[in-house]
Image 1 (cartoon, protein in one colour):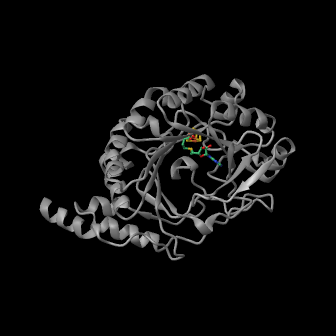
Image 2 (cartoon, helix red, strand yellow; image 1 turned 30 degrees about the vertical axis):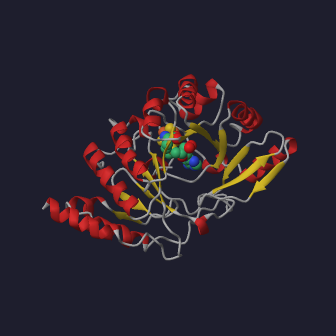
Image 3 (cartoon, protein in one colour; image 1 turned 135 degrees about the vertical axis):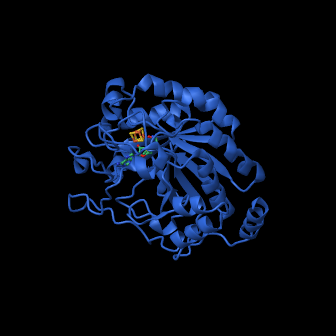
Length: 347
Ligand code: SAM
Ligand code: SF4
């Protein structure tokens, strides 16, 4: 049986890469390894979350099989996210398992998005597993505001994590969600702190994800074009032409040489160059962050020791990848809203 499986896998190795109906090659997989988190950011989770039962989650071995199949089909970049990826038990085992794909050259980049709370513990081991860059979410440099926006988080712990990551040789990118009336007054403080610490910085527009109950998402929305105008009152900004196939656009600050990323899903449509899909911790594949359509990959994975049914399910899913999303705040009501939480799909 083993041998037959190996033989089948060999046949599938020579299969063509993943191309969607709009001729976009899928080379980037974001994987949510848990829906749990040690924070409760106001734009992401409600205070009382009901998490998935553990049995619904893909095991670490299953995550390995999923990712390895995508890599065989041409995925070159893997971003591990959540929930908070570093609170998943034994997650280092998974990172270490992925090192073999970096070593073979099939995988070009293994990276993660984290809230930073556990980085002090994990930074050295992540670096040893081949992680070179890490995205850390940080919306404010003020202790009290940090506790308010994350509800359960504490700033000093995250700053220690960031420091440990840098010491371990990881390049740190700070992700800051632009929040009206919350971090508008820290725009320059955050930018200058990142320049001084040599961190990259990306601003993100808040997206209409999940049913947040009392939180007013339209009220939280601070458009990045407004943010950019404010920056240009102090700095000379030049738009850079390079894109990464994702939603980020880049600008350079003439005075410091710093590059800033802007993720503007609501004011700019970035879908035409989308090269990515997202896998949830239960094995659903979302072909678009802003659409509900998804494919169950857990059933085909569990149905056979061979990866053939899984590969077929992946191909069928990619054939359904939509042209783009429908987020729209223009009518002052989060239209095109999807009901799942960012922590489920993996931001
Ligand atoms: N826990 C990790 C973290 O916070 O970095 C990884 C998962 S988190 C869901 C990934 C990113 O999504 C974070 O940068 C977070 O700020 C962002 N995010 C969460 N909810 C969002 C929303 N409604 N709109 C925009 N970004 C959001
Ligand atoms: Fe947790 Fe990240 Fe969501 Fe904040 S944004 S609650 S840290 S998953």
